[in-house]
Length: 286
Image (cartoon, rainbow, N blue to C red; front, side, top):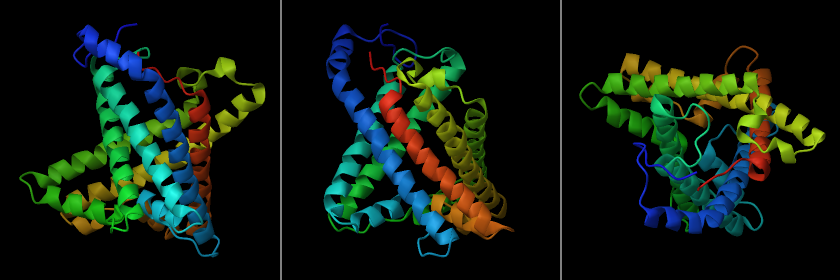
């Protein structure tokens, strides 16, 4: 199937040929990116499990997870590998956003536009994580996700209709969280995974990692979005929370230790799901 531009027009043959020639590299980088993302969430989840159990650890975000990886034996090499993985994942998402290769059913029209916007945002976020990994490797100070959340919230609030903008971002993040909870409930493996290449055991494991992983990830997204809405209503950037802040807030609720531990285990399952997707995800670039 030919590649399409976001507006639906056919791309020039030279562009199609260039992407087709590079597609094996893009696919390899995408799969490596899934592995790197899996390591990141396994680290975040494991640290939060330790914090919930009172065994040290911390409630942290992707930047904090990268710092912990850097402090491990061979941490420098691991951090560089994570940077390559993040950039590879970002490249794949940008290819999806720009070219929409072999779109799944229902991806045309407004659904297709939303999907491409989501891919572009995901690509930008993972590219920033790649930059953070490089900064940490070079010994530079990289801002935490919590600091960045408050910083960008403050900048948005300073704009005309800033509270509306922050509220809109919060609503979108909550929407993404609800969508991930729906994915966990529906557990449609055939849509994105090459299930014909999976054994019965692999399918069972993938079903569990999908349900538990996306449920936990969706819950955390909902908390992040809710705090952005609160920041918009109160016009206070300090109310914003990143991933680490959302986990910390979960830990302060009634039954917080149990809830934090459950969400943390769920995030580890989300990391395992990334390994499943690294092996079986349908990745098309042409």
